[in-house]
Length: 219
Image (cartoon, rainbow, N blue to C red):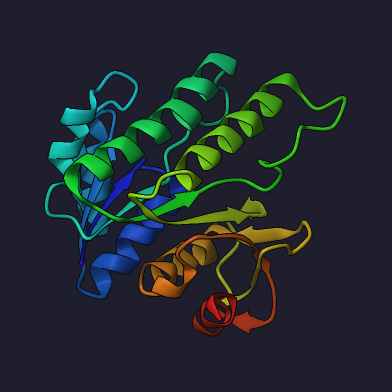
């Protein structure tokens, strides 16, 4: 497959790029800064420099032409304010979805967040609350699109611990940690499993091998 990843320099994306390239897929990662290109090349991915906060739908659609799948894994990141949660976590997600539809790329996988479907509890940090609202709005936008075969993945608290290959994947898992290695492995498996289309799934560490967990969640 040819797979285009938005947020191609993110920690999960670089792991995913290595996995996909390692199994023989053609991978392109969209990045904001040219100096990030080397890390993508090292991961086996083609770097595509494009700022999703200023690009047009047509700009992004050109980068998606000929792709079999698109993965939205971009985010404003830690240290960013409320405005960029809106422009990246919501706005760029919608732009990328528009571009996928324009390019005829139906398979669309989103890396989201637990808690995105509910109003943040009172006392939640205002920037984190804005992030959750932005992710929730982006997910709702994607879910409403008949032109996309979407799957939304909502990992628990991310860690840099080595992956175990053992996870819990379900519509509701409860809150717990998940290594980024295992998130990437699940994303790769979801791209191969069309029965997860139209599903919103939570992901935490568990005791089920990734491939088995994805098959079970799809059943």
